[in-house]
Length: 290
Image (tube, rainbow, N blue to C red; front, side, top):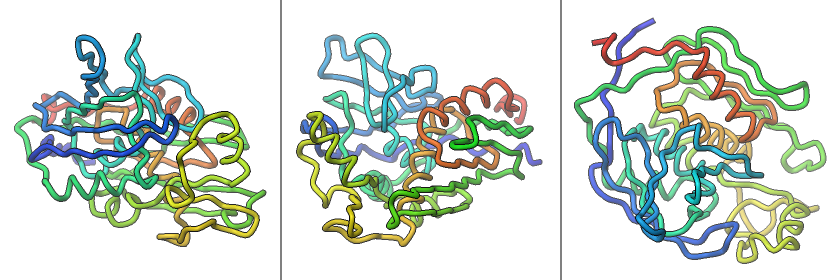
């Protein structure tokens, strides 16, 4: 296996994106700024006293249904997985994220808007090298109903996902296996949108959440199929699961080398896998590879 490491990368210029949070319905503005080497992805909250910062790493991840959330003390950032997937997918390693709410905008339910803007401003190479975390042996988490696995793989990051919705024939069983590169992420994963069954969406509405979200804002499947929307891919649902999976894996601040497989897995299992990888994987550090 090659020990070659690539150079770290950051944005070539700032990016501003505005939208509304899915869960809160509040307007939010996100400013993405270039950052120095070894910064990682750091969220800043200028709306809070002293403008606290929160680094996007798995140690700051807290349990929350249906989304990935970072928190430390009174600082909280919700639904980060789509932005994290976009940054990882486009190989942006260092970035400051300035956000004026505790939730990122839902946008169209995908990472497309972030990727489009990253493509517009471009990325630049930096002096420092990006370290690797290599899967050395098979690690499996979960049970027979839902599981996630990391397997050794030759010098690449391969993501595989198996989705099963037996009680929704319009989703059904979907599978995908894809090598993650900036090109494959942009073309095949970034625009895949969040999906939900209409019955689950109505339950969220009844609980006071997602009040402003319309059918055009994500994929909602009812008794007769997709409601007031059109698929971008025939298997768009499983592609979105890969997007979420990749966004969660990005909480490990390394280039991942391995074959990662999910079967009906979610954010919690993905997080458990990252913790195990950090304990049992092999690190290829810049100093050793130089």
